[in-house]
Amino acid sequence: MATVGFIGLGNMGGPMAINLIKAGHQVKGFDLAAAAIATFTENGGNSVASASEAAQDVDFVITMLPAGAHVRSVYGSTDGIIATARAGTTFIDCSTIDVQSARDVAQSAADAGFDMVDAPVSGGVAGAAGATLTFMVGGTETGFTAAEPILSAMGKNIVHAGDAGNGQAAKICNNMILGISMIGVCEAFVLAEKLGLDHQKLFDISSTASGQCWSLTSYCPVPGPVETAPSNRDYQPGFSAAMMLKDLKLAQEAAQATSAPTPLGAQAAALYALFDAAGHAQTDFSGIIKFLRGEA
Image 1 (cartoon, rainbow, N blue to C red):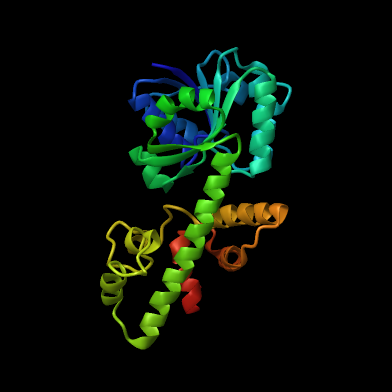
Image 2 (cartoon, rainbow, N blue to C red):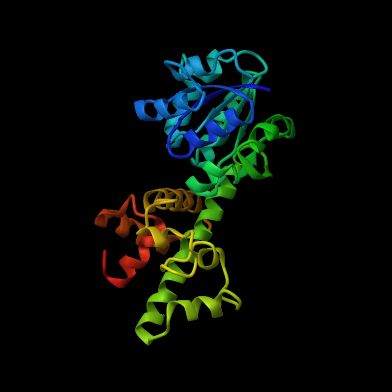
């Protein structure tokens, strides 16, 4: 079993760290939020006073941080992870950040002699709790081989997407598809309501026809057809509108940097920005159907 330093014990990182503990690994963790630390220690984790302390004398360091600026700082500052970790430590960044930051930090780690992978996740809070996440991993073959057993304790699907930053590229492309498709499914249900077509009837037909997609069959935005969907919990988030907006903005930044045409991605980002600004940042992203109805 490995010794792991885990930095960022929030809604996603906390359950992920606990699953490592359940798998038999020794985990010491750091977070700025006292409540997150309390939950972590109640489940067998060892709390430490700083990110640099979490990175000392461990086999792996995992980070789950809000944005690229945080990742750059936590890894690259004078008392950051790269400066304080012992030789042979593997770095795994599970944050969702911009591709360039991922590549820059990975290069800094490589220059210092460390293997590092970017390994953003898909699956939301439920996937983090159930250890069923998908990890999209960018980095060298050596880094991926080292990280895979640790990632397997937290997820079911671990895919090597290529070189450093390609995990982030896969994540933002995937979530752009998700954001666009959810809006399309919501629009279809709103139109069906106007036309007098029952929710369940539309679901039964489209779920077995050409309209079938994950946003419909796994995460249906209207109550009833999919029992586990947030629509049956008043849109309490599995994946918040704020997080979807973050990912869509990252996709748009990447599209602008590479001159890639993403007109639907841009429209999806604009709609989620309006939904967020209307006070629904912490509503599940499928709750945008309320906005399309004019209810939010």
